[in-house]
Amino acid sequence: MIHSSQFTCVLDTNVIFPIEIRDLLFWFAFYELFTPKWSDHIFDEWEAVMRRKGRANKAFPDALVQNYDGLIATLTLPDPKDCHVLAAAIKTNANLIVTNNIKDFSKSYLATFGLAAKTSDNFLADIIDLNPQEAVQAFRELVMNRRNPNLDEFQVLEAFKRNGLQHTADALRTLI
Image 1 (cartoon, helix red, strand yellow):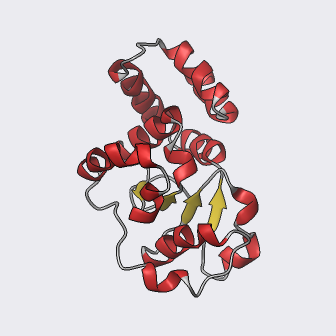
Image 2: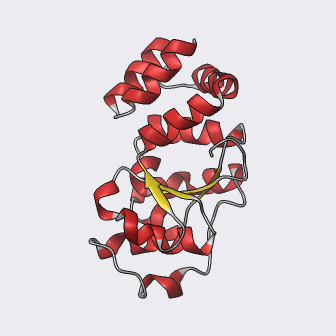
Image 3: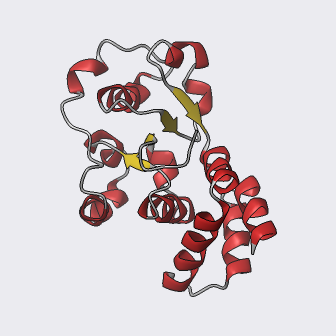
């Protein structure tokens, strides 16, 4: 069930970029619809993220997972470069890994750690379905605070669609 700050998710790098996905995830987290988690390894995957890392950690001071490095070598995933994401999720007792790289996170393997993985679109659409009023409020605040470029609600929804958030955009469109 995704409806409180008690629901913890590790955000993979591929959902922190592009900015449209990250912004909606961060606004939903700001509204305490879930608790985000990440690691230095996740940020290190993208040099551009490094410039924003300080702001993200300031906005969500409890999000940075530490002391997970020892788990990495004990994990087996199709892409060994994803083991740090799983290690961070295990270390923080996350409920979910939010990643657009679902194929490299086997359902059965994650289940052995009490974890699951969802795409950003499915995760965000679930949040909207379970918390429609708060989700719309967070979305509207995202739109009001957006700069460069300044877009209206429907333009932001189109940007979501262009970035793979089809279900999310459709769910929000029905509510606004």
